[in-house]
Length: 339
Image (cartoon, rainbow, N blue to C red):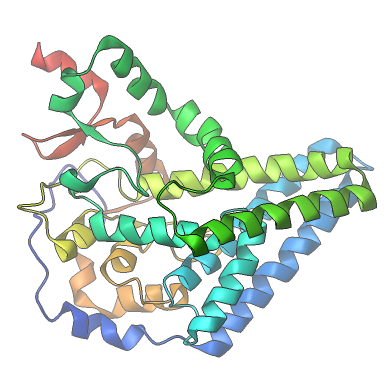
């Protein structure tokens, strides 16, 4: 269905929802291995093509950066599934592959996994914001801020900051440091990832030169990071999303109505590892990405969820605040009506 101005009524899914998704939760080793093959090998072939293109035209290099970034996003989806323990049936296999994928994504596997599990457990809960999510405040909270804090929040939610500078900060800088509340395993994950990054930089600089490495890697890093932030943003920050205080918040309801079905063209759905079926993923993170589409198509429960495509999703970038009275996301222009 297409998203329109109709508010989806956030009613809890039937208790039988767990039985509905259960048949799709079983990992398939063959499919997982094939997904690794058709992601990692093409990724390095694209890097090689970018390197060879430097001898012809940097415009060609930049053009090749887009599909290369797509493979980096797909690599992260594999890491993401491993973090949920859904990619392979073996916990050890998930952790090994997830860690290796993190050397490409530059996002420390165990630290990210810990933060992301909190995101899943608290998504849409107004009383438990701040870890693993996009900072979101209510209209009432915004109006109570000082001028300086209002400016900072507005700057943070500006699309240029959010989708261009944000990825550089989050993935390039913040991920290099151990979270103050991290355990030993999370800390080791950060240090190991940093060591892997340094090793790759030094190694490839010796092989192709630091300048060529920068010309290849910087654009793919920025593009893939921006795509990653956008996907995460748009699948929770839409007009009729779901935010409630703890007294009203419900996990299953939040998963189904606080996460969108981002209906992408087939090629983009492939590159993004079916993450557009976010409503299913939040309801049951144990469903591997390669089973999400089938789960959506074969489960009647998912026929009435918030759905939009690329054009409609662009409108989400203008949303800034949660209006507790209307129970919907609004832009700053909404504040004019309150005066």
